[in-house]
Length: 281
Image (cartoon, rainbow, N blue to C red; front, side, top):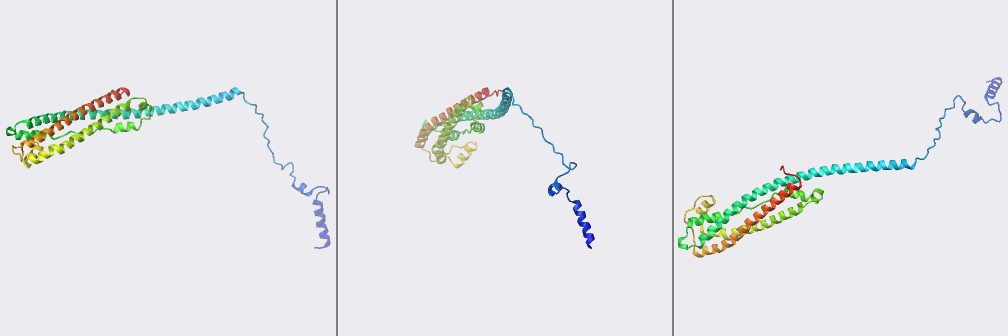
């Protein structure tokens, strides 16, 4: 490149520089032109006037009403659910009590038959040994050997006892009736245990010592035994007679307890049916 060419380049560069020697070069090159300047939107300043106190009071009242309505709706839904649950439990209790009542009727009837056999056996044991009808003695002794245990249907009662917090139960007398019923069940079981103990201690030894194997087997299979008995003496009859006094007393108590328990079942059944409108069950 010669000297003239270099001068032309320097002259061209000088012409492209800013004409104002006092101007800031950076500012001139960086300041956008009006054509390229981006449009900027400014949000207007809105004036928010304070609400009257009545509007705040109304809004608060509406919120309160909405909360209360939700609370009432939830309570109504819960009450309906609980009422249906109570109805299911009490309906099942009614069915259980009907089963118990029918079972107790059958038990009382059969225990009364056993008591009559006890009375007949006691009378036979009081007669002269020489005139003893051994065949009848064996048959009556087998009929006196027995008991009819009662086992209550307590499924619904147990479920209700776990739900006593429900107002339908808490505001009723159902727990008093249940407590009385269960208390007499425990008493009945105690008498049943004594009955079983008396049979094992009094009647069973007499049967095993004085019945022949064939007669004992026949008697328990509802067949007629013959007159043969083993090693039987007047003292054996007297001893069994004394023991029959205790057996008869306990058997009589057993019948009374079954009858009382039946009455408890009927009263509980009537109360539940009346209290919870279960007349259709």
